[in-house]
Amino acid sequence: MSGELPFTNEDVAEIVRILDATPYDRLDVRIGRFTLKVARSGTGWSQELELSDTASAAPALVPEGTSIVPEAAADDRTSPIRPPLPGTFYRAPQPGAPPFVEVGDRVGPDTVIAIIETMKLMTSVSAGCSGIIEAIIVPNATLVDSETVLMRVRPDVA
Amino acid sequence: MIRRLFIANRGEIAWRIIRTARRLGMTTILGVSEADRASLPAALADETAIIGPAPSAASYLSIDRVIAAAVAARADAIHPGYGFLSENADFARAAVEAGIIFVGPDVSSLEAMGDKLKARQIAIEIGLPVVPGGEAEDKVAARDRAAITGYPLLLKAVAGGGGRGMKRVDSADQLDRQIDLAMAEARAAFGDPRIYVERYIGRGRHVEVQVLGDGNHAIHLGTRDCSIQRRYQKLVEEAPAFGIPEQPLRALTDAAVRLARHLRYRGAGTVEFLVDAETFDFYFLEMNARIQVEHPVTEAITGIDLIEQQLLIADGQALGLTQARVDFEGHAIEVRINAEDWQRDFRPSPGRVKRASWPAGPGMRVDSHIERGGEVPPFYDSLIGKLIVAGKTRAEAVTRLGHALDSLEIDGIQTTAGLHRRILADPRFIRGEVDTRFFEGLAHG
Image (cartoon, rainbow over all chains, first blue to last red; front, side):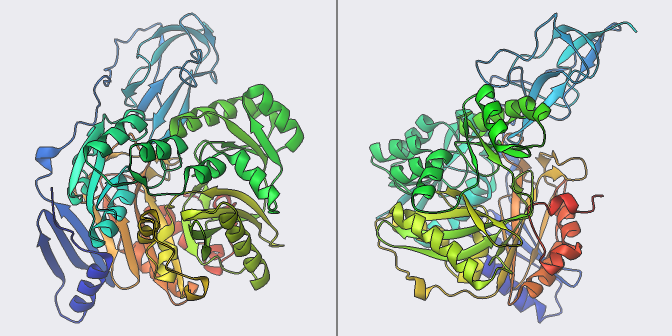
């Protein structure tokens, strides 16, 4: 690990104070893996920190045991339900509770069929149309993106 | 003597704790999830320990894994930061049983304040005014409570603060759906789905008091106004709370210190109040038994490093400060920069940050864990950094905030920077006319 402790807020303020009295527009300071770039920005100054050799250590953002499920084959007679944003798909309001819906359940446009957790925020997913749940495609607690089809509804015939 | 400090958190607060701990000569060990291995705090820490996979439930919220990692790292102390396990009495107890100092209050204080109902009872016992309300274990109980408090009302998580699991309900027909969401959020954030029903007070200000105690003595480090919130998530925080007359302000700080003394509180804590924006009557809301996100504004006006105070007190030292020696100077404002698309209903915006150019210069402080090229994972909260400005007066701080926001450029993800420019342009903000409904009155783009 680093062993270096770069650039406190006081350091940055001091660098700005010094540079401000010079004609220079920019200063790059490198300590270990950290590079600080201080530059003029409009009437003031900006700072940007960069960390070297991060690429090799880039984390896998999809944890083990979960996967982003690709879109299932479209079916003309059913409507897909997609989440409003990426996140973790949950079928029930809480662990151990009964799922919001099961295959064969009748839903209306505002029926909550799932919740999506993104950045600790829960967003409810509505069916979007009236009909019968035909298929539940994604397993519970799966990381999904906003293109993922979670479930399919067979809409009521008008 | 704390020599090896385990940090059981992530993000900007991990970065913040490492800085002070290193200055004090401690070796820092950061517990990271798989998703945070390449984060800036991980690079800054002396050592890192993988505590589990990306989802918080199996990493940052897992008492067993965090304690096991701290034991394996031969840590003397654990700093829990805020959120996650920071107010979890079982976690504090597990640390103590493992022979590790918990950097926070005693288990008894965590139990008293962590449960909103106990906290409220204690507040009533020592004569602090409270808002009408009570606990609800399930939907039926919540409906009964709602019938008593009336609408609009607030649903809150019994187990935690920070606005998680908090929902405003305006009418009975919304109640069931909001209870589901509130309970789910409470469970996800704190591992405890219980909620609390409380009457909603319209024209209020959120004012809080920073306290410090060593078990024998307790003092306050002044007030903060955190009224500008959206869905109970703070957006802007200022110190001191401005425009409150001397007498009610003193009553407020006295009440906070009285609570801290009653608890024989050890460490840093925040006592939150709802203050009527017109009459300055105040009601005790809760006490957060941990460091808070907005602690830098207090540091800016007092010159006191709150993380240092936490570490010294945890190490068994007596409070080195007395009330008379705490001086307040100037005004400070913090804005939270979140990875959210504020123009699309604050939709979370995780992803890779292509550019992270923050303002720099005198009177400006940046606490951020996101560097150029850094990743904002979808698993955790959306805070990517805090911008803190200070000035001799509020007006000077407001002007400086304008310059600072002009120099702020984050590319690659959506952020709330634009929202803060909008808030800054609002005449109510410039005049200091803030209350908890400020955000509702903001001209949206």
